[in-house]
Length: 360
Image 1 (cartoon, rainbow, N blue to C red):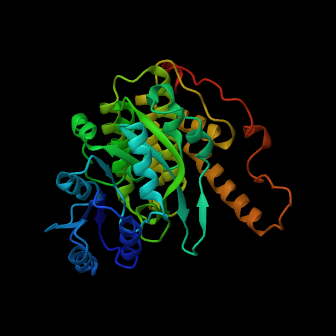
Image 2 (cartoon, helix red, strand yellow):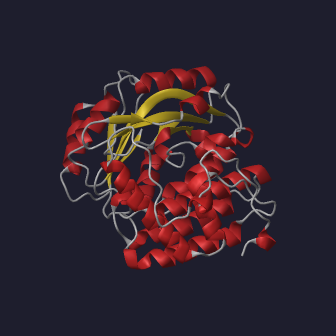
Image 3 (cartoon, one colour):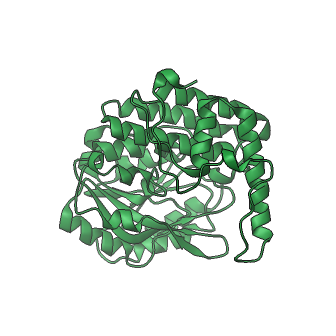
């Protein structure tokens, strides 16, 4: 296990205890104190003194999540590596279940299910189960591209990776936010044997202070991360390239629409950068547009229609607020400012996008 740590002292004992609860000397925990200004470093040292399976690295300066993971990886000696963030946790039995599957199928990468841990203590499981159950054993992701679109698909934390295979890829986490985008997709596509475990083995904590809930210009880092990703997957088959393109645009639009990420004055600029990525990366043979409002947003990006996008975003936020105020079972109102004829029904079949020459 590699656990990068920075300002997570309130959550760190739960994280470490959930890992170390697994008995056995086969477990190695490399904790990386990323120059944390709180008491996290001292807490890690306490755990290391009482458990020989724990090794602590104290970095002299804060280097960020990705490079802290790299530092821990350089120290790791186990056959497999699992990155666990210091504010997350593993449910009971996860380590044993993962070790059993690794011994059974010997994959390059094992993909796990996860649940989201909310501030009020609620746990919500994802919709990944049917996709994970359908994987018959170790496969290539080029034959199972649906694995690329799982919830938290880009997260390194839901992947257990054979260390020798990882070393052979030469992949390292880059600096900056959204570092997983440039890492996990190339990792999955490079693997000859990807297996899946239909079991919640990771609890991902939703909390204030995470980058997904921080208003910052650093969300623009995501464009550089996707540029890195494309440079690493240049040889993928056309259908997989189309799926990666769709997932990228979906992700960028999530960031563009989230009120807790971009400074409001830079939303138009961010949308313009999304348009630039769309035109630059649109596959020659097109791609399958998603249905519903997501497909409509893709069309607005293709047309560089920021005023229409901003109006749609506002209208759906108003409609969402109305839905939250309605009694359970009430019909969902359409936003008054968006004509029903513009909206794509959620169940509509996906349609191919035009080729690059027609993307204006």
